[in-house]
Image (tube, rainbow, N blue to C red):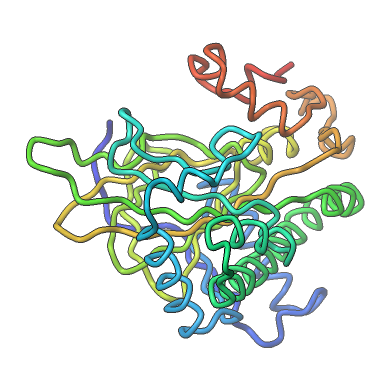
Length: 313
């Protein structure tokens, strides 16, 4: 499984007030972002469009959400596998999660909120929407940098119009006696991109190219930006997603959040600019949501790399 090492992921600061496109700070940050994604599949972003008050509010809202009765929780369903409520799964008994689809829209968050709180919960709704919008801005800034560096801005702008954001609110309970401490199995995300935000309890580990697991320290201003399987296919393998897992230790419950990007109602394909004699096409055009459904089939679960099994050349 590899040894455990301390966090040494690249840390990239997005708090520079002069981080405008074409500025020197933008160009240097762009270089750092692409290098980190190519080398690690992820990096830690320090991001100041996110206040400590919002950090506290979104995790308080999470605790309130997970305190709901089980018969209410299971109302959070989705046509897409794993995009609704997941809990009490034998393979990951410590894990519990909710999915808020279309989380950057008032309509999407209200639909979720009104389902679980029929009398309404304006505080949860406003907090979840504010969080999702702030993090989506970071996601789009990162991917704008990637598309500029690769000379595929127009292709990314097309994807941008079809992006759908899923907010996942996640809780890991403390292992019981004689219970394994695995919170979530090692995996890559099936999303286009993922941005994770942790509360104060450690547990997230990311695998580097040497096979070592890096333990990631939580911070109120830090976000883990990760490429997903769909991003690997879109970039013709230039960016590979990082394997990650959660291992619980100590006796504190762990809360985390993830904003996951998906491409809806648009066929994703490798830009022609990324294909040449030295870099032949590695992936056929694909439907992102059909890929997610494929992953949850027996063939998808057995595959070493689901996206290659689904649409690899």
